[in-house]
Image 1 (cartoon, one colour):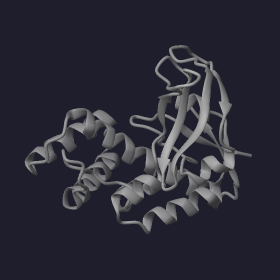
Image 2 (cartoon, rainbow, N blue to C red):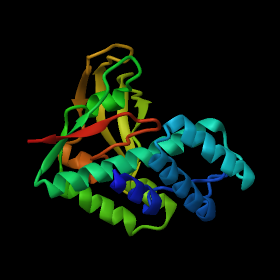
Image 3 (tube, rainbow, N blue to C red):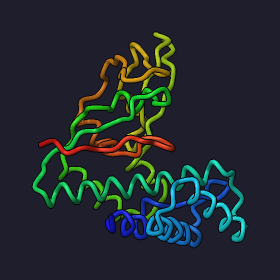
Image 4 (cartoon, rainbow, N blue to C red):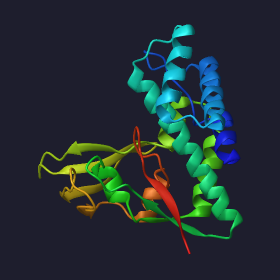
Amino acid sequence: DRRVVAHVTSSQGNFVRDEYGRRIEGFGQEARRIVAAGLEEGLGRDDLAEALEQAARAALVDRAPFYWETVAASFIAQGRSYAQMSSYAEAGIRQYRIEAVLDEQTTNICRYLHGKTFSVADALRRFDRIEQLEDPEAIKQAMPWVREAQDRETGRTRLYVNGGRGRTDLAEVTRSAMGTRDDRGDFRALASDSALNEVGIGFPPYLGLCRSTTLAVV
């Protein structure tokens, strides 16, 4: 889809950092160009990651290969989500649901979000807000990745994000299905579905190498 390529090329949400965590604007533009060109050629994530790593070495940006694989996957996933939201809006579709790949590799995060529904209009408004941002920390807070931590009192795993309002707990894992297929697991919600959208996780990616996508609710 041309929308994916266009979003990858122009989005403020697609940036890279050096080994010290600083945003590299010059190479960020080159990284977006590399991924967009690769998508037009039909390259996969591994090939895109290799191209990014080679270009980074030439630009004296020293990051591990896994970092570039994560960058490629993130750029593609963000572009795909934007293209899907735009297509849904054009088709008059108001809601979409999250569709995770429920296999042995799927995280608690994607299992929890699997099946949840969100507003197309809200998602597009969030994309618009992200494009108005320039500070990398503000962008990171506007579209945070979901993290896991063990609750000290219960010993259970909690899913949370660090956004503009600090830490927001999303859910507690009451029965993990990690390592299994076709089983979402069980969770205790700690935030409403509307709150999930407000903290910036209404659409993928939710973590590095995220495979979740969206489907229209019709």
